[in-house]
Length: 170
Image (cartoon, rainbow, N blue to C red; front, side):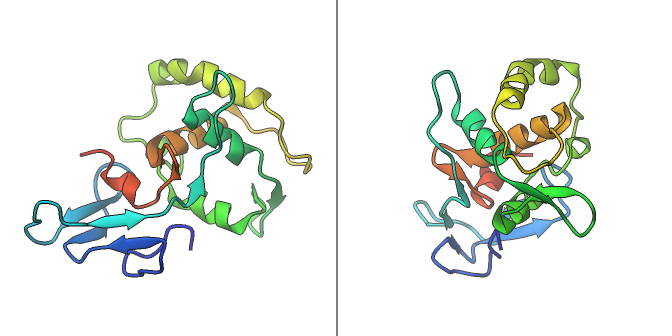
């Protein structure tokens, strides 16, 4: 799976029994990590390898824009449901797991000010080469969602499914 099950310790993820992943939270992507007992100072709670490594940024790019550029450059194909998706099954699963899955999922909505603040990055990303796969060009909202997925789930070395859930508070 793109985002490993928290009960699985397979070398890509370690999750202590002191914490628990819960669905149905009223914030973020609807999931959260909660303490199950008192946690001692210095106790290892979570260790994870990046699910997707972010490339080195080009001149003028942020790490987030470089990660979104990498996702946008992946080849796409029509899925069984008729929607265009990345051909890489790992990337498909990752993108369907990360918050926000849609712009409607954002807690306060995405009004004109945040959209305006990210306009230059979205325009830049739309100008970048995409795979020659016959897929239609991505619209502003799809590029913005991918950019937000990277911004909300990535650290310098890549995108992390579990660690990103403790990168904020509700």
